[in-house]
Amino acid sequence: MLGAREFGTPSFAVRRLIAEGLQVIYGEWSVAQLATVLAAERPVILFVRTGFLDYWQEDVAHAVVVVGVEEGERFWVHDPALPDGPRAVSWNGLLAAWAEFDHRAALIRHGERGGFGSLATLFTTRHG
Image (cartoon, rainbow, N blue to C red):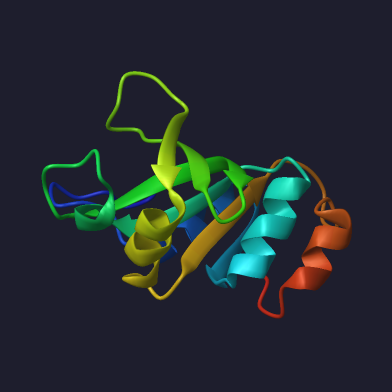
């Protein structure tokens, strides 16, 4: 469905979920947009470089799901490479890891168009 290869999947492939009936907002986000979406209790997929994450030993392209934030302190993430979560990640570490992918992020939702409600107005580029 996403076109995964042995070496990974490009971040933009998340838009292929639209063909499965999901709504997707994908693109370059600001920290303010991320914080607003997290405040609405919506998880966000961030595309990151793991070398900036203190719990990673390798530096590879990766994706994590951010589920919470303590502004200026830490983010709470689910990392698909780990057996459990969420895990606390330093504010600066995650922002540096995310910057390596030009602050690319995705918000995914089931349901009809317009289902993002007021969150959709935060983004100028929407898909789905």
